[in-house]
Length: 452
Image (tube, rainbow, N blue to C red; front, side, top):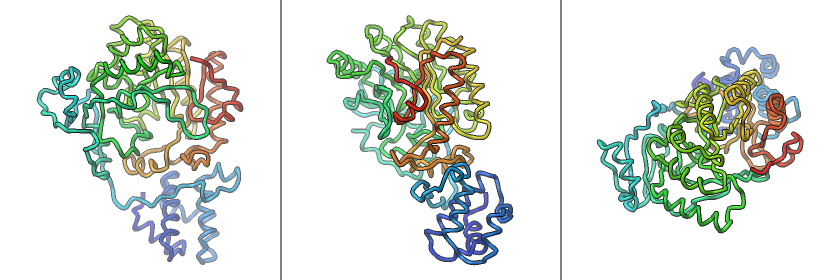
């Protein structure tokens, strides 16, 4: 990529934009994204017919050059109609380089452990601390007291720091759906925040109120409260999961959460979903299988895993774990979320679907489909932490319904329609639901929300 100083000189000397810092910033942003998307140099960009035609007049016309650049940056969407200024997000370019300093080998080894004083005597705290006996914990009064410098925090996202806490609030709540979308009725049992994997698209990166990986150690208190809520029918839906703000199994060798969860749901008619990218299934295999405990894997093509899902098990490793779990007697499910749109995406996702049906012999409780979406503040974070990412090269626009960055409606509909058609070619009765899509899209794609 060309450096920023060279880019701004190009804007002044070659595109004749010599005044208006905000205008220069917008043009610089668009050019930066075009160069990255197509792997162009500035000279190659000058050779484009659209740019040559603009330069012939040798006059500054901001609206004209911006429209040209938008059409180059978003060619598929531009063909569908004019793109409004409110549809695109053009933050200023980063002024300095950034080094991501995090690494995970598959075995979690925190650099530092913090323990709330209230949590110190908990049996689970003592068990976890004994695993890292060489490390002296830092005692804190409350998690809220920890302050972070945002710039330095981004280098690791606190993934190498562990916080053991006593949790007595936000035990269970509905999945935080976006505005104007149809909910799948999923409830979150909040037993952790953050995970050791480092996916470029992870929405937790833009959360500013967490200092690292947070693990509540009063798991028995949490399950006691959950039992109270279920007994009082406070939770109207039957599916409860632990994999929204953390990976359900990635830290199980440290926490051992799986055993108390299985013991609790063994006498419940509610469904527990353990959502994961992990292969830590040892405790599940050592327990009597439960039909109301569904182990669900997030999946993507290996190409996407290699580029965007850092330090995670491979696709085949995940599917072998799913095969083992299914043979042991547990139901399994899969989440295509996020589905990424890129050239030849269909072939890659077709291959994943074929592998899933091969490994599971088609016995699947449900499959969810959700395309890439995120809060716009995450765009700059992804760019800073993962400069070689591919996901931001696609045509992501601000959706007016919830202000998140998404693929345009026509792209999402095409992706989801293709995925549904392929899945139903293997099993026409397979249980599919959509994630973060309005009811209109469910209707257009002939998807109904089944009861779990």
